[in-house]
Image (cartoon, rainbow, N blue to C red):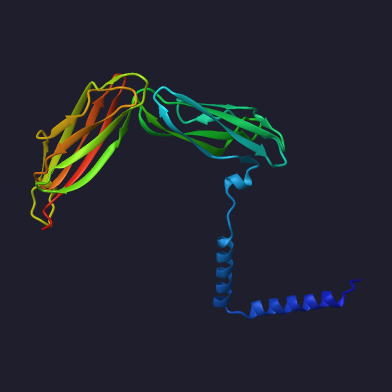
Length: 282
């Protein structure tokens, strides 16, 4: 025998009334209610992998800043198991051979912490911005099946014996107005550096169509040879700077693309150039 209190009876009557109202709704009204409920569910915040996985990392990215070619730097990522189960980690996988990663332990019990030491080597002959990743995986069964957890990112800006800025130049000018590209070189070593050679390779893509039109078949490509190149110094002492000035003619409407190649004792650096030449705006 069931005994109903006044409160239980009141709730039962209210539920029956609500159910009756739902049954009396037409199909359009029911569809609207379901659509609103779906939108409310979609608007709820979604948990990220970092929120749901028991390992919490102190950070996911680290930038080493400026590095010289051949230089090595290390950083340690820390993490903690905030879950209820032990986590078995597989060996981490670096995105390239210039990055080494070593776990403090492969077994992380609940409440325990661990670390991952990452060492990045700036490869000789390579300059510019560099970004690498280290993949973290856990072992999920006795067959050693692994599950990808996260990617830890590292980055650096690699310079050789000389800081060169900028490394890419974009410009726009008018027909008949020559443009001068300025590149600065700064010593990045404690010894004398000779600038062995500075070469220029430029191609002009002249658009010979009338103003306001464009026809790819009428674009004429030809090498640019009538440029002026100036080098301030042929050698840099420690701490010294110099400039390269490249004056490029602007003869036809179109584009000029190419590069400046700077040869140093142990490397060669390329500065990209992309110019647009437009008709006179007068």
